[in-house]
Image (cartoon, rainbow, N blue to C red; front, side, top):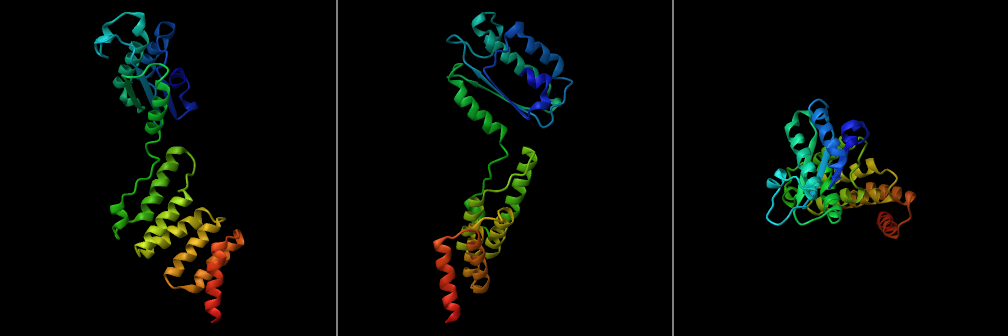
Length: 244
């Protein structure tokens, strides 16, 4: 939390799991009151996990009126959250979660998981079956756009997974949406030009389109990259048919 306040350039995202913000007479909380209103946090993310340190019948509102040492850590975190909420113009993307059924030790697992889901909210590509069934749905464009945005967020190029795109390609092939299948297989070749499987899949596409010459060309290319028995069998079958 002190790094977030004083050296926020070091990381894009910060996670606090039941952080000891009571430390040194709430020094970090006090510093935050002065720093958060004036500092800019564009592109930065913070996730805070708060745990239950209260007596039975006490809630996060009433606990703020206490002065006991037992709840000092929780109260310090709640005060920090208040400061965050007051200063949204600094563009910090933040979230806090109160884990009623967790303590300092148990919050680590669930807190880390929820933090990663919050930080990388943009990463998962979700395509619905109804969209795959829709001939008008521009699947390749959606995929390319998604990973372009993911790359911008990550700060480096993130390519769509080869297997994922391959599966989408075969689904489109099965639905006889040939233009989409072709675009997806070509996208994989662009991203993974040294993958034999990408050319094998392209060969299968041309087989489905009954373009045997291009199917042979792609199977041959695949075999120059890796010897695969299934690819070899398909190539030999096509060459025999060609001779016949």
